Length: 288
Image 1 (cartoon, rainbow, N blue to C red):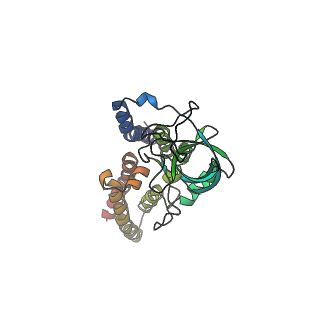
Image 2 (image 1 turned 90 degrees about the vertical axis):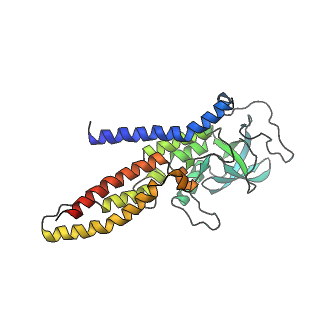
Image 3 (image 1 turned 180 degrees about the horizontal axis):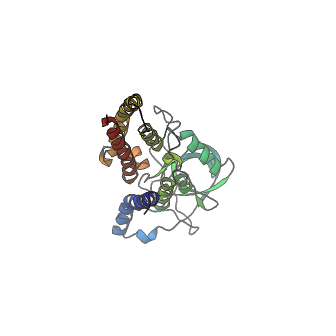
């Protein structure tokens, strides 16, 4: 088997293990609760019960069977939109995604935050019609309406994940639409899109790529050339070791956002790349 074929097999195995790690616990919980078969994609049905303020009164973990039609007023960021819902301007936090921040108070603009907002604007242009589906609590702690968003039948969260702008996450206990979003995130990792694109310097993938490039062992014939190479590699080893240490931390010691966007299986693959480059660089610096 060629080196490239072996790398493709390893990548595929990492994707499978990642899918199991993200979706498996959710499916197990739902199977144990006896409602695994009760989460198909929502479709039109009986009239949806609502609370006094017009919001759905569905309990946690129960998806509303009826779509609420709304019109997009604007996109706030990569996972939040403003819509006209039954004649009222309503802020909607899209379920099962968490894109890089752009407007959060006290938080700097994160890598690919503006690009995520632009992608959502492309998917949901002003004036477009969307369908909102509830799954669990009607609102989050900030008072935003929680809903899965579909346009022309397509799950917007899934497409954002497919483009590599988000992790698939459970928001306020809502997991009905998690599986397709998590699968789309795996696809983005496999095809190196968005947050997983090594050609984008601010991404973790880009940082790994830069460290590996800095550790590249170039041919050196003369003693002077070897001395220059040794100095360059020695200075590159430290930053690569620091990044490796961050990636190698267990999930329990990673911030939630970091571990969701960079799951353990994906981080393991990046650690292996760094280990290979570090080993070659150390060997070159030890040579006379």
